[in-house]
Image 1 (cartoon, rainbow, N blue to C red):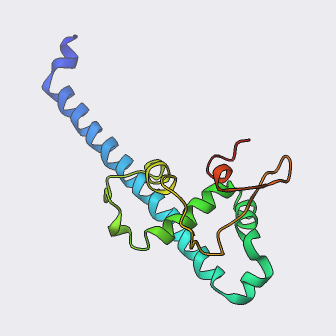
Image 2 (tube, one colour):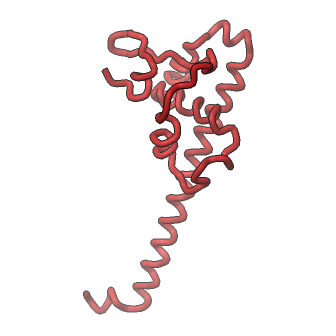
Image 3 (cartoon, rainbow, N blue to C red):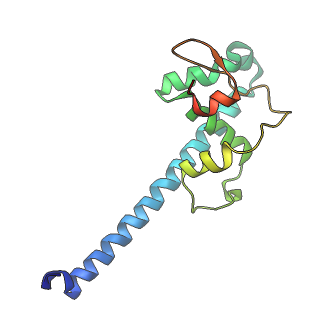
Length: 142
C-alpha cells in the first residue's frame, strides 16, 4: 500500500464516503418500496369504483402499464404488494428490504389464495396475444 492510502485522512475519507453510499442506497431502496406501495394502493382505490371496474375490468393493469411505460407484472406486483401489506410497518424485514426481495420472497412464493379478488389482472402476452395464467404472470416467459 502506498503511504497515501494508509494516512489517517485517507482512511477517514473512505469511511465517510462508505457511510454516504450506504445511507443513500438504503434511502433509494426504501423510496422505491414506498413508490410501488403507493402505486398499488392508488390502483386498488380507483378499481374499487364500480363504474370504472365495469368499463375497464381486468384490463386495467395492462392499460396502466402501457400508459406508464412499465411492465404489466410490475403494476401487478405493486397491486399485490398493497393488498398483502396495506401497512408498510408490517413488512417482515422492516426497512431492511428491497423491492427485488419483496417481489421474490414475499409476493411470488406460496400458493394463490382460492378466494382471490376478482380484480386480479389477466396478463396478455404481447407476442401471441394469449392470456397467461398465474404460472406465467410471475415470469412472463413462455
